[in-house]
Image (spheres, rainbow, N blue to C red):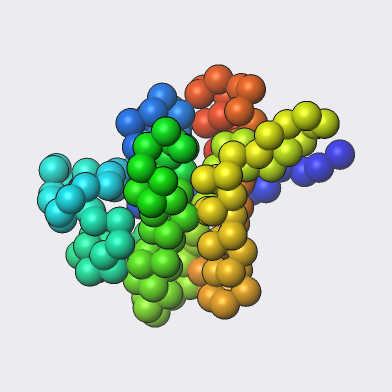
Length: 178
């Protein structure tokens, strides 16, 4: 029997989210737990939408640095691969799913304290015979594995959500891992 990890301390979480129901369920679960959630969405330029919501250029370390410069952070949760679709422009989708981890990691790695980075995918790993792993989610796994080796202070963790579960169940699954 696997023991549940201790509950993470309340703090501020950088949530790199799209517009899906899973992202909303995760943000709501963190807020119910007493954490502050700062939503970061992909955009064409840096914009402060509200006190707790920003738009960034995914390839820009400067945009991430502007958000992270103040405050203590419990960690960052990268959910951008959940919205990535092969039907989109492949380069843009791959940037969202995995390439965006490089500038984020650079900024987190430059902080004086160690950071926690959770890279969350859905359906990246084949579990049962006949499963077809999501290639774009695999991009995130590849980048995250490099970060685990090259930047151990980030304390990067990979979490693959079960694609057969609904958004609320996926959020519960993730909360158990934080």
